[in-house]
Length: 146
Image (tube, rainbow, N blue to C red; front, side):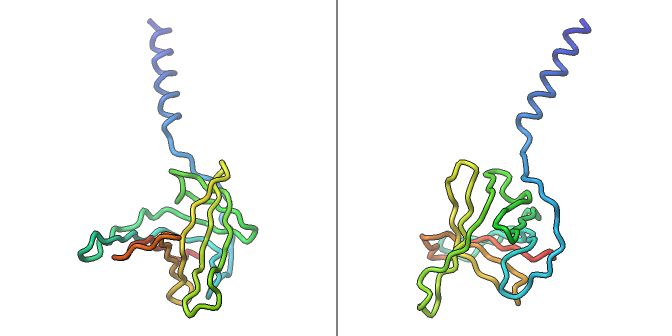
């Protein structure tokens, strides 16, 4: 009977550890990034979209996204689909509205691309889909933590 209880407890422990989300740990670094600098720690503040009517704004998850100077990414924002690094690109630089794009790389070397905007003197970061565009508007917003 004791062996059965130990076996059951071990099975429960293994199954709960397999479904646990894993965030990429990192040391929170003190940065003095501001203005047009995307580097630093960001807190997910909202997600918004529209299906043709008014914009629907959902509260953020409060998860953190840290963009380091060396191009690495950490925090728990991408815990569903971990990313390990980022790269910034500017397309159509001669345009009156150039596309600033952030490209996140996953461990399997696939990428996720977003158009990004810095607002509020560099204290708000917004991601929108890229290269497609939401006609009615959609995106994800972050607030600078440090």
